[in-house]
Each structure stands twice: as structure tokens, then as C-alpha cells.
Length: 509
Image 1 (cartoon, rainbow, N blue to C red):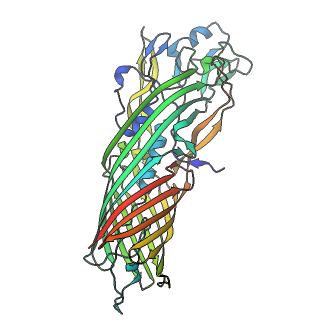
Image 2 (cartoon, rainbow, N blue to C red; image 1 turned 180 degrees about the vertical axis):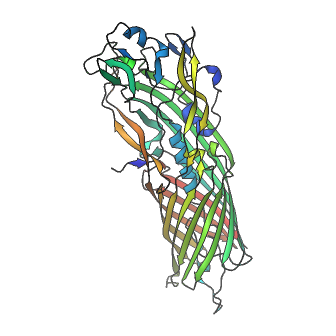
């Protein structure tokens, strides 16, 4: 099966210094995932106490031969440990939400009542017989001096990422980091570890937009969304898969000291880790749309244009993507003759390619590298607050849509559409893969723990998303048009909201 791509929540965050270095809640919505990996209870070490540590895997850093007289003193000394290779969990969600925000279909600003006449014959054009598409860009412009006002509301409840349910993710640390423990001349390496996460991710968007006809064939649209984002996360069931004995067996996997959740102490399980939640509301990214109609007759119209997204939304709180994005596009609208039963079919098609700059949502969320002082003067390496995001490119998106309007008289239009997005062809998205764990569960666990698998980093690349929609538009009175539509995802790639409702109103004058 094709590797599913998206920057998923890498694994295992690093132990923090003390309770005083952390605030009581995440600073913004994009920190919720990492914040949920803060344990709720202090963890004991042989030399002191670390309160509110970030979930992490430790390995011995000081070389020691198993069986030597220095072995036990070395592995029970907390300052001889280091944090194993870890990846930030929350980066995945941030990148996926950036993509979701950038590919959310916007209601076509000229999808309403358009009154046009053929410049030669003076006859009314078929464009006025259809109320237009909903998401697909309409080729016709509103006409010189004409104004179109619109409002739409959408709710996204994301329930899975790459086919894995968000309320029951298993995140994998694959192991393989060097340990300071040697079996004779053979160095040992860390075994895998996993933990579970339960997530709830929601976005809602209210979009107000205005279109003005500068000339008969050129119009400009301005859209301003208001976005509400909400994320809650719970981390639990941390398990290190490296046995529980204090002595090595022939396979080299039975010493807890190769992996541990607490430096210097045999800690291979952590049933409860932590939880966090936060929501924010505010203005999103402003949209500017410029469209030029390049061809028109009684049965067809074609236009070219560009969308420009300005970073007016707060990216740290998932209200915007945090960078400017430009999307050149073209649109084609076709019209049939009025059929005997009064129906008019109006096929439509558009395509565009969006390119974005660098943003915190395309980078990685990291903790500050420091040392934690324990009782007695010992120190151990940790990563903790403040959490800082690096910047990276938000993946580019090539998008297309195709469908048809079915005008039933002059007051009713049914709209059927298909949508496709190819994400990360040039500026790749982080990939996700599922990896099986081939290591024994700790023998000190209560109950049988089967071999496990989890989500882990798969590099960068591209992936596709496909959706369909069914919509209905009705002319309520005059030029006031009401819209209702359901957008349905067909695949499981990336962050997925299976069904998204849309409601809207538009008025032309």
C-alpha cells in the first residue's frame, strides 16, 4: 500500500527540568499535542525528583561493559544517561492543519445571479439561467459596476490521519540509538517504544466576501474568514519494549538500562502521561482573487486568474497558515441548450497550483535543550520549555475540480462536483508510515501485552486527496440565493474530516 504522507506527530519528547519552568497550560493551540506528553505526576530518580517531565526514552551515555564491576554503579547513576533520538509529535498535526487550511474550498465569489446579455444579439446568456457552482470557480465575471456579497459557514471535525483514528493513535519510537553499554566488543542499541494518544481536532470557518466588477470581463474579490480552532489531546500507555531484567541475555535485550523512561531507574511503563486542550477564535487569512474572462459566447466561457492569501491569521493558533500563498488558476464554464423539460446542464472545470512560503506550521516544534539539576548536585540532559517552532515550507497544492450544475427553472440549481488535491509535489509534505515492533514487551507488565506497531516518520513526499460534493442553491427572493452543500472525503490520506457541511447566502446587485 502506498505510504501515506503527512507530517505526523513524531515521537517521544524529552524530559523537562522542573515544575517551575512550565506554565500551567499550552501557550497556543499548536502546542497542545506536545503539552499532553507532560506527565501529570513527578518521576523519581536515584538522585532526585523531576516534576512535569515530557515523555521521553533515555539510554546510557557513559560506556560500560556488562558484567564489569562498574556496571551497576553506572546504570543506577542518573547523570550517566542521555535522551535517545526523539521526534516531535505535534509537528505532524501543525503541518496537516496548515494544509487543511490552505485547501479548504472557498465558495466561488461569483456563484450567484449573473445578468448578462450577448454583446451582438442582445439576447440573454445562459449564465443567468444557472445559479452557478458552489466551490468550483465560475468563469463568468459579475459585470462592470456589479457587486456580489456572500457569506458561508463550514465545520470540519477531523477524525483520522492517514486512516488511523485520531482518538486512538499509537505513536512509535523505532529505537536503534546507540547505548553506552557493551556486550564484550559489541555495542548495544535501544529497542522500540510506543505510546498512545487520543485527539480531538476541530476547525470552523465563517467566510464573508465581496466581488466587484471592474470591467465587463475583469473582477476583484476580497474574502475575510473568521476561524475557530480547537484541539484536545491525551497521552497514555507509554511502553518500552526491552524486557525488565537487570542482567543481559544472549540477545542483549534484557537490561532495562538500554531503554528507560527515568534516568537510573527501572521504569519501562507509564500508564498515564498527560493531557491538554485549548481553543481560539479570530480572523483567518485574507483572500484576494483577481479574475479575467478571456473568452465568452452563448455556450462557453473561460477565465484565468490568481488567488492571493495574506497571512493575517494567527498560525500558532491554527487560524491561518502563517505565510503568503499564491494560486494561479483557470476556469471553464459550459452551457447546454434549454431542454424540453426545462433543464439546463452547465458543466464546469477549474484547476490551479498553490505555492506557499515558509511558516511555523511547515516546520518542527522543539523544546529548549538544557540540563536539569537534581538533589545532591547531579544533572541530567533534558528538553523542555520554552517550546519553539522552526520554519519550513507549507506544502504546495495542485488542485482541480469538475462537475456540473443542473438548473431546474430559474430559481433552483443542483450542483455535483469532484475535487482532487495533490499535495507536496515540489515542497514535500512529511510522510507517515506504520512500522511493526519486533521486540518483547516488558515482563513486569500486568497482563499480556502483544507485539505492537505504531506511526513513525516516513520522510517527505507527495500524496493525493479526493472529495465529492452534492449541493443545492435556491433563489429565495430577488437576487438573494441560499446554498447548502455536503463535502465528502473519499480517501484517508492526511488529516481527514469525512463529511463537511456548508451553508451560505449570496446577493447580487
